[in-house]
Image 1 (cartoon, rainbow, N blue to C red):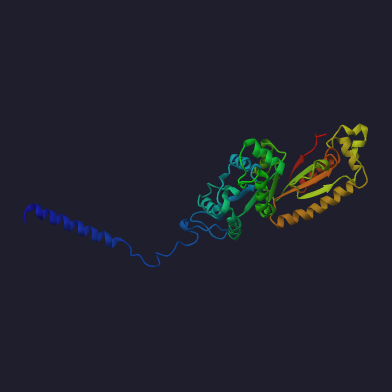
Image 2: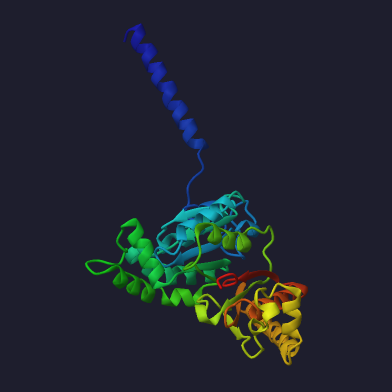
Length: 345
């Protein structure tokens, strides 16, 4: 063996010895070490109020809002509004992936505190998984809210025709066929919604204002109310939870000196509440609403729309809506007043 061969042999022996020593330093792997990650570790996080992700407290579980509703009713506008308010928004996410999205948010160590997911019939077969995903979220005690965007058939047809696009469920039929199919598909989800917004007569700015009113606050109130005056001759508000009729009171329209004014006018309001039964109605209905509020809170309902109607939505319903809203505010309910039909006459 020559000198070069001896050097190679020494070098090889040294390398083998180093590998052997390194091998001895490695801990042995047992079947216990190979078990699946425990709940609560970052690589196997469970989103639950009773289970923590590694280094992430329960408070890091993000808020979740699910935006759904009729195609053409303004889902994209609602989503953009939440995005502007700092929400992490995912459009057209398959419902089966919603729990996974919440888990990822929980792992972000508070960087993703609020998530909004847009779910609609574009998901096709994935939409069938929504009910299962909602049940999964409920089992894990994840707080979620559903915002449903509604609109009349006429308004939806006009919108689709204006952009010259087919309805997602239209197929070989007409736009109205697709709308009917979608309305039936979403019927159950609409019934479960925490907030229903009818966009039939709303423009983009008005819809954004409604979303801002509900989600712009830093702290989430226990209950938020919208008191809406309207005229029966213009149709019932489709997003109303409760409807009351002020047509049992004399109409200021027939008083010449009051006709031109609205229920916001002090003289009109005084005329309305000086009528027999007006103050009694306000007192008793406010008392009834206290019972309703308590029930809504127990059921986790956060939004209520109270529609107050008269013939034209100008005098009686406006005056009563203002007084009723003031009562709700005095009882700690965050309240928005909307006069839907005032000014239409």
